[in-house]
Amino acid sequence: MTILQPLLSHNFGGTIWRMEIDELTDTMVAEIRNETDKQVSFVSLSLNTGKIYFEGFKTDERWLTGIEAVYDGVALLHYYKHESGPEHKGIIAIDACTSAALWSNYSNAFDHLSINGPVVYNTSLQPKKLLMADIKTGQVQRGYQAADKPLPNSIVIPAITSANQFVPGTLPVPFGNIVHYLNHNNYRIVSLHALKNGVLQQHIYIMAGIEVLYTDLLNSGIQKLQPEAFVLHKNALVYIKNKTEIIVLPL
Image 1 (cartoon, one colour):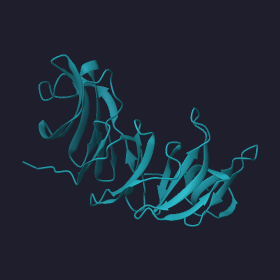
Image 2 (cartoon, one colour):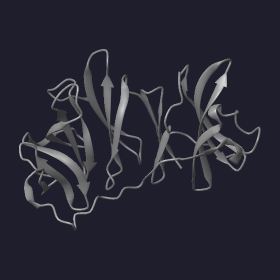
Image 3 (cartoon, helix red, strand yellow):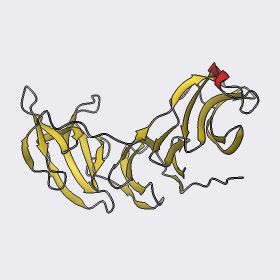
Image 4 (cartoon, one colour):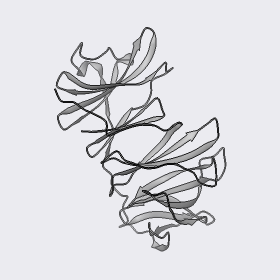
């Protein structure tokens, strides 16, 4: 029987709020939020080797900060204008492998990643004018052009289907009669909710045909159906367990 083993299984001690992946280096940077301490930190790891590059990196702002994107070895972070609003301000760039500070700009804000680099705008100017910036230096190079198309990525999210798509008796009866699934390299990855002794749980399974090769309990004692539990980036399956643990499994 094929034995599947995680490259990485690590608990980061806070809620994993957001994850961004560098298409060029397969580096993932995650935003970890600790509600009790009102502290945000960042972690970086390799999806190829499972190595943790750094953990517990913090900015000067304890809470009103987050991650924007990771590209070409650079992680872009941001601040929030207000605690109660989603509007971002400023850009802080760090090395995605060492967490060393690279540059910062407190006049501009990040809009999106293009095939030619980050697209930014000056938050004090209206209407919003998009600009192209250099990912390594933060210098604005020129105005945004139609040729600056959004950067494609290799992230695949699962599809949703009804439970009758699967062999009866192979998996638990899904609560709500739906499952999230994805087929990759002759594997089928399945996430579902099921009741056990009246307790709602969320599980993940990796199957080859009707044979279950790998399984994990993601959440237990939850009150409602959770969103999709995993993503696939190239050949790396990434999922979150108990909201605080990242698992990377090569497929």
